[in-house]
Structures are given as structure tokens and as C-alpha cells.
Length: 250
Image 1 (tube, rainbow, N blue to C red):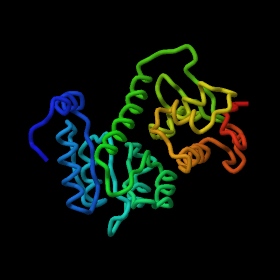
Image 2 (image 1 turned 90 degrees about the horizontal axis):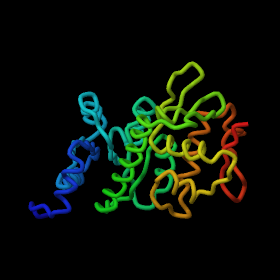
Image 3 (image 1 turned 45 degrees about the horizontal axis):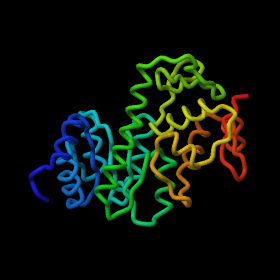
Image 4 (image 1 turned 45 degrees about the vertical axis):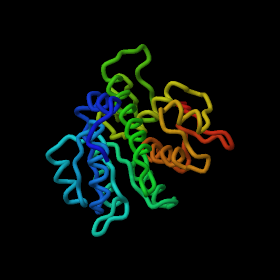
């Protein structure tokens, strides 16, 4: 790859001078490829060969996005993610074997924000990173904006859209990923309205989805485990068979 940057690349470098991406993959070639490609696009990139190195970097640095391979020796990506969530809500893109649906489902259930099959398409990876950063920016903007209806009840919890936080009755914050917050915000703004998967993903600023992709169902299932008294019989975010989901605070 040429060392000379195009004008568009230089613009990206100016737009993202502080965005820090952490790549965790046991394959040296993959780490170096991602460091080179993303580095030339203005991102600060750190690399880890496994969980131990990843945690050392996180302990000393603020990280905006993590890219983590699932299939690694010693400690795999799913185990690392499990150990980080829910205390660490840094967005995570999981790298999975092509067509490995089970790993993708498990990763999303554990709190991954997105996934990408190997071999990695670098342009698609960058697009996924930008989509995640846009969602994070929306949360940051929400923390500084004011609006008339800025709180929504989700059972015993309250979504504070001004602070971009989900709060318990005692005021303690419930950790949310950027996508989880975006979904709750969409439901709060569409109270009583049935939303299909396309509408949810579009309004939550997520990527275009595959009709066989279960990501939206998995994320809502994860939210129900946080919100519902009995996630198996949800009363707050209900399923409307054959259509989608509805937020019913009653």
C-alpha cells in the first residue's frame, strides 16, 4: 500500500485525530494490516495479541472502538468480551469465521455492537466503525441538549435522554451499549407504535440488515433481561407476532 495519502484520506485524518481503535487478534498479519489501513485514515490504532495485552492497553488508555477476533488461542474473543461487560461499554466489533452464525449470535447476546466475517473487507470495516462512532456521537450530543420530553419510563427504570443514561429507581446507572441506548430512544419516541425490524434499525442508525440476520431480536432480548421482571413474558417491550415490537409503558 502506498505511503502517500490521497486528499480524501488526509481529510479523514483531520476529522478523526483522536479516535482510538484497539485491535485484538492473534494473527500478526491481521494486526499489521488493520494498523496500517486505519492508521492511514487518521485513527490512532493500538494492537493486542490476546486478552492480557488488551486489558493492559485498556487500563492505561481511553479506547473508542475495539475490533476483536473470536477465534484466538488461550482466551477467545467471546471470553474476553464476557469479562469486560457490562462494566466496560466500549463498542466492540467481533471478527468471525465466514458464515459462523452461532458465534455472531453469542457475541451479540454478550454485548457486541457489530460483527464482520473474515477475511475482512477493509472498506466495510471502516464503514462499520464510522456507523458506531456516529451512534456514540448521538449519545454525546444528547448529553448536552435539552428537550421537553426527556425522560421515559421502562418499568422500574427511567431513560434520561438528556443524560443519555438508563437509571434505576435509586438513580444508579444501568450500563448500556451505544446500540442499546439508540434502541431505547427509538422506542421512547414511538410509544405505543408497532415498529418492524427495518424501522428499528433505520431509526437506530444501524447498518442495513440482512433479512436472515437475527441481530435486532438478540439486542431486544438483551434489553429485556435488563428491564423486564420476567424477560420470558415481556410487558414493556412486547412482541407483535409477524410484525415487530411495541413499547408499551403501561
